Image 1 (cartoon, rainbow, N blue to C red):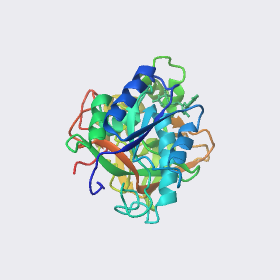
Image 2: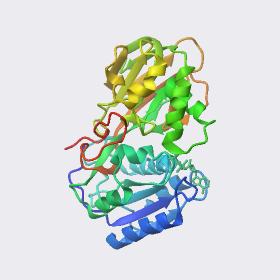
Image 3: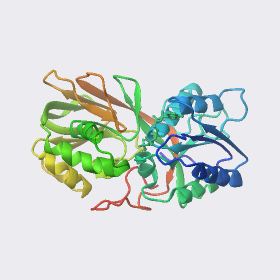
Image 4: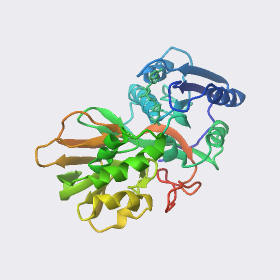
Length: 357
Ligand SMILES: Nc1ncnc2c1ncn2[C@@H]1O[C@H](COP(=O)(O)OP(=O)(O)OP(=O)(O)O)[C@@H](O)[C@H]1O
């Protein structure tokens, strides 16, 4: 759901993780210089430990602690973005008396009630940077940031996007959560030393070659979508996983719903990586799609369900994962339309995520 307007931001909090994969001092210097050239006030927080980004975002929005930022720039990888989002959602819950996702809510700058969280902008400085790609595809970060700072509506939009809540742990799901093969790929990736996206591009086929489907069930808002041998069930979120595998081609980040794709055993696991890279997986027989507010993914033989969310493997021994939508809770800057840029995969398709409006 687009906000009524996308005014240019005035006050930024820049949160940088100096330990993120590609966070060089000159990158931070350039981000800060660009922000200072355009904005009234810019505060920089360098993270010092895990959780530091969340703390900084919350502190910057403390009532009575001075004007809150209307822009929060996360400079780091997906882990840093997730921590910043956690902080923003804590502020959202503190400030939003309106039901989650209600248009307008209390979060627009200049709103009558206390301002909600600043809008997220991402500068990619990690190794995978899937969050940045979900929002901007392959656009260069400097051009994206400049469009945000100037409120250039032809290139950047501020929207309130949906976030998933993993009911079993209370964790947030931004890019997506997946059982089966994609989770196995993360385990295989640990032994591969090449950085970033390339690591996962090598890991997934390797994991697929050794993969055995599990007995599973997927339920969408109380109705069974799939029951039987399962290769993967992906809930989201972004259209791509691993920044390159097209799994949810019709997912919109701001429609108030979660999409789910289940790949049944009719599709050989070994074919999933190349089909998904080519953008062909979703139309194969044995692949089903659903959309709803609450998605339950179960393993039915009593053994732990292997699953991940946002690229983090879930280490607890749950037999199910339940993802509920928190509609429209996260204000975020992204590309103006989904047609603006393309992700370079073999079968390049329009960017997933933000609805053109
Ligand atoms: N100062 C710090 N020292 C150690 N760890 C930190 C620090 N600041 C943040 N972290 C942690 O570093 C982790 C990894 O950061 P991040 O994901 O941004 O970088 P990355 O792993 O290089 O990128 P990507 O996730 O895109 O591959 C985060 O989970 C975060 O909690």
